[in-house]
Length: 124
Image (cartoon, rainbow, N blue to C red):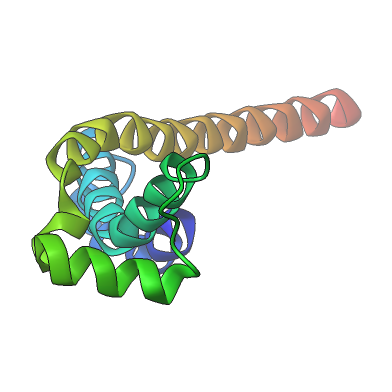
């Protein structure tokens, strides 16, 4: 979700003075990482709970049974326990997205310099 949403939204938002700006790219990446993490977090909770109860006598039959039991016993918000820490971890994901953009820009500049240098050598 991170890369797909980022690559879709980046050409729409990062235009004009924001194009190539590390901080604009970072904050866009952080907001996308946070929103994608919040959307996927209930599935992570189900997966984690399923693994934690694997050796216990009371087991969940499947993901649907587990979902219904968690919501019935603890409420719907129990699926989102710990999501704020996950949002803070999104800083690293945003750094990866923004860093990738900067490295991509750097390689583009290096390719252009290499191209002009080769043209210069051929003409002289």
